[in-house]
Length: 65
Ligand code: FES
Image 1: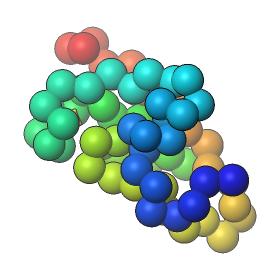
Image 2 (image 1 turned 180 degrees about the vertical axis):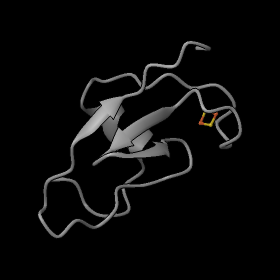
Image 3 (image 1 turned 90 degrees about the horizontal axis):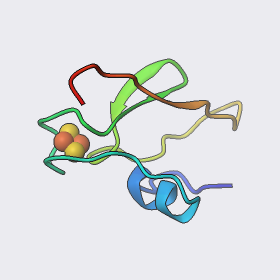
Image 4 (image 1 turned 60 degrees about the vertical axis):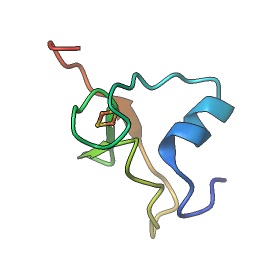
């Protein structure tokens, strides 16, 4: 279980998953992931609260990265 507010990059790193990054300030989009159907930029977002306690996280396929 991951506490609400944990940043996506650090939790992915702990899980052995590499999220591609670029700017690390939210402007380039290289770190975009999909969380329960919503696109988020991992470098500037953190794990949200979730009533169901299940978050489905996917990589985004971006032809530019
Ligand atoms: S690394 Fe550029 S938006 Fe996240």
